[in-house]
Image 1 (cartoon, rainbow, N blue to C red):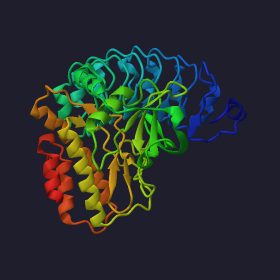
Image 2 (image 1 turned 90 degrees about the vertical axis):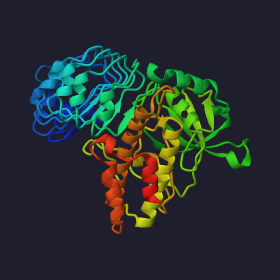
Image 3 (image 1 turned 120 degrees about the horizontal axis):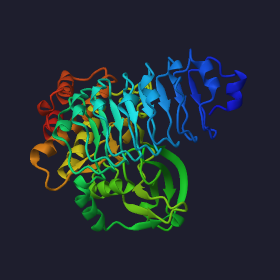
Length: 433
């Protein structure tokens, strides 16, 4: 994090990224001295409610973060920034999203945890849009113009007021990661699963917290020891949710999806609900996966946008790749048989041991499909997930020098731009057997 003193002294001349969180109520004019180099401006965690009209002077600005401020309207001047492609206004008090505030090059828009009731029709006129985060608003519908967003790959519309999912949404050619939990559309099933839960509560005070294992959009995961627990259940992992609403949706939706998933050898499911956290946070308790397992990749970066970032040294043989693929497909098939769309089938949610054994976790973006949903719609959700698996397979094939041609053909089928032409998971499993 930078300081105002550094900015005003000229010490930051020529930097490409500026992070300022120091109670700002207006943008310091000294920022404009960085106009010829600044590409990322992070103003999160201040007290801003407006941006200056001359913001476009930052002509190289590509990324603007203004989360956790006091904006009630996305400033129109944002839309005038010619190079801006990523805009983040999470956790403000936005009630208005003017069409003029949407940059022409918009690729990634984060509006999580606000008070928006509608989106402008002009959102469909942003052809570069790939990621759209809308969880935790008051939306009842998406503009039909969004059917033109042919590059949209990830959409978070959880924790809103949607009564239905527009049919055109499931036909978008590149949509692979969709989260719709926590809406009236599926609320009955979520409530029933939570009411029928027979998993125990586990008190925070009974646990000894250990090292950080990882964190994602919805929470932070630590190792934990349960001294008084059964001998085979003392090594645990505890996920503490980051807030009442996360980038993925409501914590209780994740809890419901984890419960509905049940047990499976390639899934990391909840074994208890965390209670009595000292800060009142909600959480899940899971079995601790063996120490030989590690996260396969890191989440997407600002530049990779929708694709995970793997360690440069990651390589795998054909046998390992096929074992991993079978494990992921087996887990995904199980979820869809239970009427669950994972919504976040990514390498950063997979633990692997380098020998082909994998475990899929993180139900933060999972959606419980309503009981009344017909077979065609269920299969449409499944084919979105098959596309996500196809992207995984592409990443693995690029790191596998001896992959057989049949896997290349399977991968091509999974990423077909025509959703109805993609195989279902049962067909993918057959091709991998």
